[in-house]
Image (cartoon, rainbow, N blue to C red; front, side, top):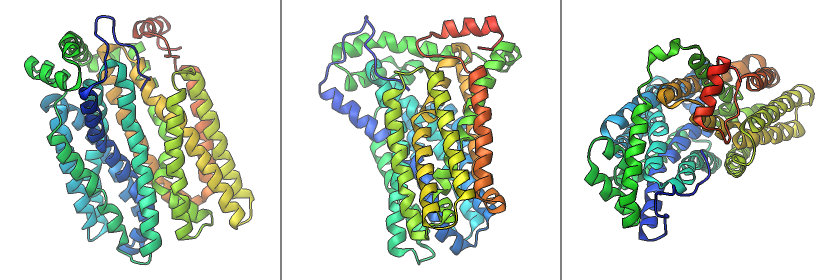
Length: 472
């Protein structure tokens, strides 16, 4: 993720016109995939209380129902990337819209938690596929000057989808909360953006870079003429060819490259960043925030309303992060992020441990959790994705990012799986003190191993890692 840049000197400027509206429409439609990603990962948060009553979930089966979507997403991200490379970005997004619909209908009609888990896994395949396909589609159809802004929209739509899920859940629960099956209504709302994504993508063009990669230059030029001025479209074909060749080069790395020490260490850094991003516990709040606040002392109806603040401050955090991300060095911002999130974990843990049960304790925990979410989404959340896009040499980029993102999803799923039984077994305070310990390890890891990437070329980074054997 980056801010927009100037056009390359060999290209005419990207002036505004009717094509700008077309590009904007494409971005809106495609980012419904991000909205679905956010809604389907966030909706379970407020649905768990009536869902537990209706299907008789335990803390273990809660963890399974929530985390199985994330395990599905890890697989979906790998499969989705391959399918979009083979059949096209647009084709893949259409397929994902159908999978979102099938998964949603299956979840809504599930008679027991086992069937629900199966269709949550199906939804996970769509979530992971969307995470791998939508940003690529946006990056490949946007002009270079607007690429960062358009790709960032998808990340904003993800957290907006989670916020929307929290708000819709709060409204539905406070009106019909006594109805055990009300969780089905919460889940079925996701059908609307899935249908909008499918219908909208039927009228959207394919990625010009993918078309060039398939040797379909005339079709690629026709697409560019929809979203550029005629002279810019013709001039940009050479740029699209260059990027397609660059993309092809990034797939030449393979398992044999893992035998090279500096490459192996670089991939371990990427995977470590993915793990520590998730071990902040951000998604324990995104998935279980309502339950956590209930355990802290809020009533069920108050907890689901208070949880909307987590969604709101998630959106605010990533908005602030986007403004700051190219003004502060990556390492400085990442270290600051881990320091802040670890501090707020400690404050949550101490509040749960030392304050007497009651309203004050509940509100202290709410404030510290909300501040944690804001700091996390404003720093570590977007920064890890940005650093992963910057640290890997071109030849191994696809392999290295694939490994790092897969590990990130698995770490996400592990946190989602173990959080409910851990809180039930040892309580809020010890659970958050575990997050404190993980945060301290993350600080040491970041300080010792993560390189500064801001303002440095891939060639400079590669030379440093070759010379130092992978250590900063």
